[in-house]
Amino acid sequence: MKNNKVINMEQIYCELSQKINSSDLPVLIAVDGRCAAGKSTLAAWLKERFECTVNVIHMDDFFLQPYQRTRQRMEEPGGNIDYERFEKEVMYSLSRFENFSYQIYDCKIKKLSSRIYVEPAEISIVEGSYSCHPALWDFYTLRIFLDVEPEEQLRRICGRNGAEAVSVFRDKWIPLEEKYFTAYQIQERSDFVFSFI
Image (cartoon, rainbow, N blue to C red):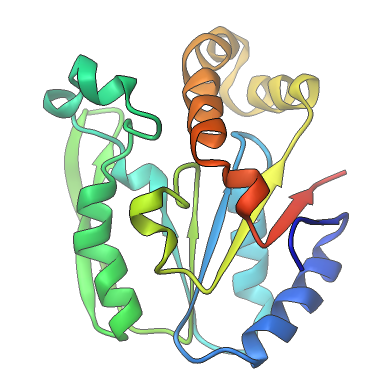
């Protein structure tokens, strides 16, 4: 159901369940969308709701390391995520139902830190902005885009990250996301568009 505007989590759960029941395992779900739209919240809720094994992988663990942030790379739509490492270390193993591990990027110390170990699951949810990057798109069974109104987005960022972070998101991170969404038509091409009210 292309670009179905669903307004509550129960509705999206029912829609996803119908799609999943007709799909081969493993099922890979992307939860992309605007920052502060509720991607992590939806992924965690779905993990609890599905009556099967579910992995949740966070795209935030794959931001670029400082040495990778060249001017050319940062000008590329969706280029501020290490999608090459994500494809190599995560997506191939998820799609093959294999055990794997990866190191997370720690924004506080600005380098790779602890290692996450992942076992195969019937459903894997990749949540975070840039999860639908073209390099990753074809791996997914389903793609969800979470939307949020600009004023509500900034209000949530303020509540989550503090007032001092709002200008950084407004001037840097949000424009980078919007450039990526527009360049690759992420919202328009997603299987579901979902807004928390």
